[in-house]
Length: 100
Image (cartoon, rainbow, N blue to C red; front, side, top):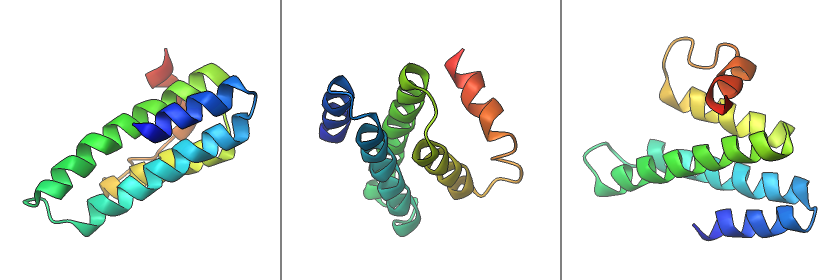
């Protein structure tokens, strides 16, 4: 997506905080779409696809540039949007598991 490209360009110019925040903002915006549209709506399916892409971008940024509070908050928000019991238990472990 355009925001992932923008984030990569920011990271290349050592604007890591802005880069991370761009990804975090995009991910949390997509999560609001998941809540807004019913499952049978095609926009919900699109939001699911985009949430997977933005989640992967968050993890990739974390792996390459290290943790940032905004990344952790966005990943945590994604866990909460699942409404699954214990979905966010041990976020640090969750991120590490996906990175290695």
